[in-house]
Amino acid sequence: MKGTIKVLCCAVLASSLSHQVSAQQDCMIGEVKWFAGNFAPRGWAFANGQILAISSNTALFSILGTTYGGDGRTTFGLPSLRGRSIVGAGNGPGLSQVRLGAKMGTETTTLNNTHLPTHAHSAGTLKGEMTINKSAGTTELPEGATLADSQRMASYTAMPTTPETTATTAAGSVGITQGATGNAGGNQAFNIRNPAQALNPIICLFGTFPSRS
Image 1: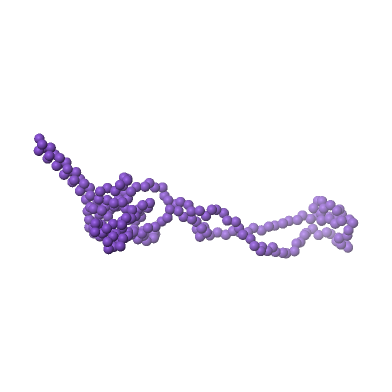
Image 2: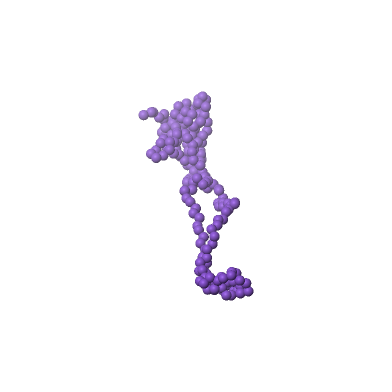
């Protein structure tokens, strides 16, 4: 009976170890995944830009090199995905070149005059009109749109037979010595981050070494 129990215990332990080894070998060294837990599983590490010793991670270093940091002699770095999304490296059609390991983007931005579309502000014209009565001025009160002169004072020596019905103003100009337009807006940065949910990025340290095609 005791021998049977020992055999069963050994079988369970061997099965557990086999599953752990299999779980580690299932991942490919350098593979990055998203993990919903708050810890890095055995054989994995958080992809948060930490510096590792080459001597303890020779296989991973042979894949990553110093693309993500380190001096290349005794240390190398892991990708830093804290607060970042992932974009494919390379040059897609109509897109800019993205170098492997490069960091880009910003959470906020501020607009300035260079972001506005080209446009012009036109100045309007001012038109003035005056209504003149052609009747002779015989009253001191300029009622009825009449240009009147005083009965006690002669404005001119002789009245024309037919009074003029138009008024002409002399040409002139207006000069502005100094002026300024007021600024509008607060010139504050605004958020351009997409809606997201945070998970932990993890990278495989030990597993299957990827073969080059």
